Length: 389
Ligand code: CMC
Image 1 (spheres, protein in one colour):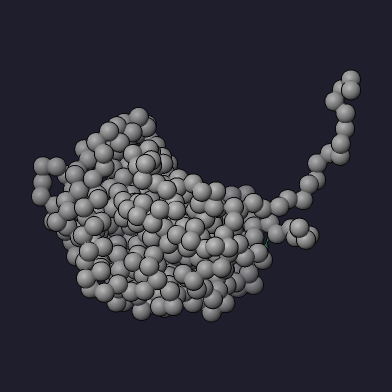
Image 2 (cartoon, rainbow, N blue to C red):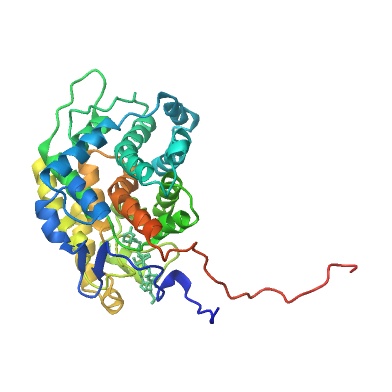
């Protein structure tokens, strides 16, 4: 019906209405359900923001308490699911492991996964918020050959996650309030970002009637690419390569500007922000504080700052309105916390999970939602006969 417009990358096409997240890319504004990200960063927590995104309002104290409580009760993985981790090579990228295990989770809850049954949706929302961090931590443990720990449900959401990642069986785990607070903030800053590639994937898969596990598992794969969530890993690799090669920052920036094959300033630029990414501002402030509080000094942070300053003053970046995005400084903090580089995008995924869940719900409850089915402009051969016909 009507005529088809060609819009590579959906630069000008809205795929949906949404009441969850507001972005003004020119001014560098980000709001969840109307609340400015800066206010949330200062006053809220990841779990509170998860509730806000999913249910639309800030929770009361008792709502938040029972949400937290329910999530704590659902952290255990079925023992059999754990054998999945041994079926995968120790070199497996933790993003692939996270996506595979999320897809596998659905097999345990097939009779309770009807997208149109609100009780199922509620239950699987809590299950995913509880279990994906455990899966993520096991993917980490597996990659370093250490035993999995059981979740400790006396601990807060973030402390439990940190213990599962960094605790070892024979020792009691001491939580570090600086790390807890910093990780909570980073997760919250990633919690939603309207119709980005992974969220659009979650909605598209959901539009077919596929269940929440299937939709989120696909979203995790979409996030893994270096142009999307994979950029946080790519930034650290880029900084490491500059340091190891001894190349000057100026020379590296020249190579970016000359568009040398495969050379981009990772962590810079954004489809929507044509101004400083408000999340990057908050992360940059946190990077200094956290490294200082953890007593870590990392020359890669200095290198990142030098790169930023040179790029911001350069005409190439000015003309294209390229600024640091959320991925530019997060890796330095994750590294200071002790996460290996390959876990960085997994942390992004755990952060983004509430947004995916909220967007999936919004889509399936919107009476105007239809199966997603883009048009194409056909450029192939005209009709021709099979040889001999
Ligand atoms: N380094 C060098 N040049 C760049 C960069 C960059 N990071 N980003 C964009 N450009 C140039 C691009 O080459 C193009 O130049 P020209 O007009 O001469 O052809 C111009 O700026 C416009 O870029 P685009 O590729 O058309 O922009 P897009 O909206 O399609 O892509 C992007 C957005 C984020 C994929 C891109 O900026 C990029 O590849 N950045 C690096 C990867 C990155 O940091 N991704 C994380 C995004 S933020 C959070 C997330 O989703 O994870």
